[in-house]
Image (cartoon, rainbow, N blue to C red; front, side, top):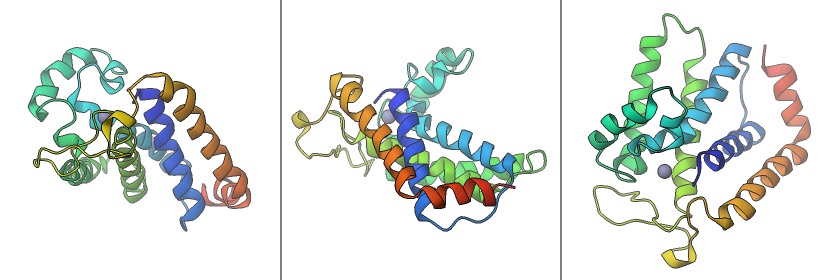
Length: 191
Ligand SMILES: [Zn+2]
């Protein structure tokens, strides 16, 4: 999956949670940081690939990526697994606690927004040929559908002409069907 598709998938997952889950009030600052965290979370599993969007969006990122990605063990391993999800959640918790003294935002909201993005990435990658080693270190990759030749190629025609528009459609559909909930969230829950 390309970075663009991951961004949109993360946002779609976030929209789904906003319209289906009871969400308390939050500050505008929290909402904005959570939105950014969701996008970073949607790209974060590709920390293991120096050519990924995550690194390309940071100045000097490709060099940094080349240094850091080998430490994580190569593309689509640790960071694309359940253990990776748990580790990311733990590291984020520590980072948010450290940042807590300067960043006045609701940690829990930011944490969830990031994790929703992170998990959405692994689900989306499951639709590609390579699959996802969900149970790493068990060396088996899982995908949807299970037969890899039925799955799509990253950045290929199916992703561009079907998956991306479908995600746009799902987003629009979720907001349209839950318009009042969505409006209520923006108007009354962001202070
Ligand atoms: Zn990935």
